[in-house]
Length: 469
Image (cartoon, rainbow, N blue to C red; front, side):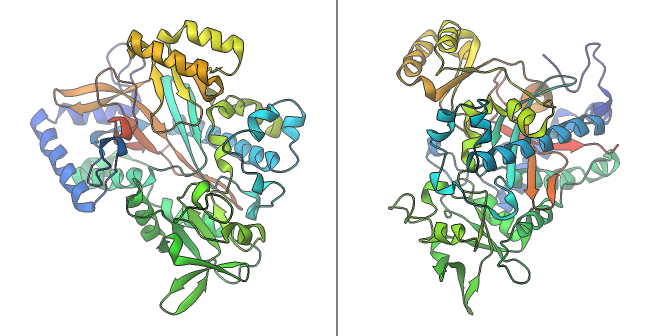
């Protein structure tokens, strides 16, 4: 198991040298006082996350860990190059599957996996999206197993969340430990909202006149990520709207204002495809905008992320991303995929069923840590029940080895102890190219031995430091 702070000899690794000295000078009681202060700050800010399995309590805080996760400049350069490469390939894949379908014709990705996929939206076929960008905001989940071993765990190309927590974690860290932070030489992340707005404005449709008008479309205050929706709208200086605030007239989209209707050029939507337009998708949706897809097809408005981008989230499609990189870019992948077995294939399914006690099994369309089995931590009865699920619907599952995720020092009730972490960097794609804010959201499994870092499953978050080179 790779400890990101300490080497095999017990000495701190170079990126964590300042953290080690800092912790040596902070007694447990001082850390506890600061942890309590952090919780008060988060409550005052109002940054909450509703977990529906716990009743959807809108006042629930995501636990915040005081001890930052640190990446050196060289480590980050490797990650950033890999993220840009992967996102470029994913955008090329989405453009291709809704266009010429060359990767399927070449036999590199099975046609049935794409065309029969629940995330595939036939309405997008042949549609030229503004700027040629499909996944404007990508959250690429990474895990680490060694000094230079980074693996992509999954791709989030629909409506990735968590960036507000990344930004607020930094604000709280700077408030709690201003002197220490000022000396640490950390790359800033505060420009993310500015970068996001620039990316969104860059894909405004050709019919846009003047500075593009951007809005953030939210399902409303009862959505688990509503805080983030309102936070980003406020930070970008744009309107936060719900479906009832928008109207389609004469093939264009307008927002209702006290001065009348105002043209909208770009919609950063945080609503799933199925609810975007009741005239095209779910007729019972009260969250979307009737006629929105018609305006989209006419080229009158840009939607970020693009309709149908969710096919790239599918964990069965994930298996083929390295091949996408080779096919579209003519390059070898910089970031590795986790070895994956597709339960829809008879031979691979047989292996999975025989080795359930060793593997992690996930739903291909699952997210948030739901619908998964961690074999080594499951009971025999749980593995037997999950085997029945796999046999009943094999295409719905993939399996991966139980990786030995890296650990970072984390403040827990007993003191400072190693806990497993992952990282979700946020990648922005616009007509001008691809940008990555230095860092991302580090999620931490707070329970000893747990590998599940998702906030919906009891995980917490850390500030992520990328040191200046």
